[in-house]
Length: 331
Image 1: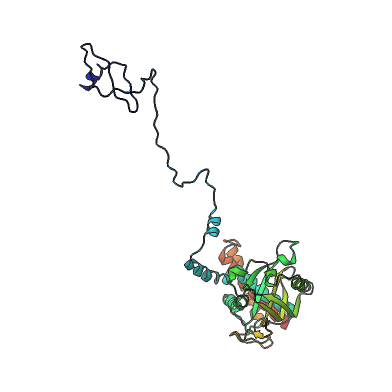
Image 2 (image 1 turned 90 degrees about the vertical axis):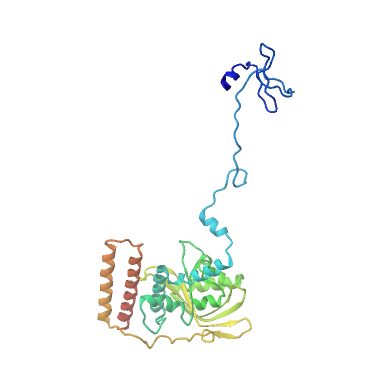
């Protein structure tokens, strides 16, 4: 019915926004479509197809092309909540037990014995305990590692600090490790020059004893390091220097009061001349080294040097080799 009625409508029909539908008169003079108020818009001569599209919403509400931000940038720029800050402190406390740190500490201990002729610890302990033993030791110990060849003395960066060191410098692990070790001294040319001379003398001689020098905590509190020993940290073969480490137990505050680790709650060990703990003879030490070397070779047959099992086994091997060398030198 509709098609029949619409076929009777003349072709001269105007469609427009706000316009009424009009039709010409039928032969009998009546319109086939009810009349409404006449439109004031002109009737278009040519019809053109009109395409209507909805405007796309801009969800971000930003103009222009969005800037790409890496996941790392997002994390660094994000302001942590108080809960995240506490969690971060707890996480950083466990970084001193990583495999890389343990392997570095074995070289620190071994290099100290070879350079100074004393032992850093009186007792012997297993590889599983070395990280905790040094971290909780009754002395202040810090180290920095050399960077690329040609790196300036003041550009060396801290790669280790034990608990006593962090307490003395009044900071967390993440606040100190990775920063230039020159930041431990005052921003004074005389202080920095004295420190430069100390590091260069150590690099030339292998170690320096009874050093005194001013340092400053993260809060700006000055203190005078007393009786410090600085030594070169070298590879197990001794062919190359990797960095330097320092150890001390006493310091003097800005008011002239002498402080020590013992006063801060720790007991200072002896110089290690009298050993305590389990004594291993030379033959047994050689057997342990060979046994661990065989284990490392077996692991490398199926794994790579980057696998945790291989790193741990190599760390144990280095420890046993260091113990063997110490026994050989003593004998």
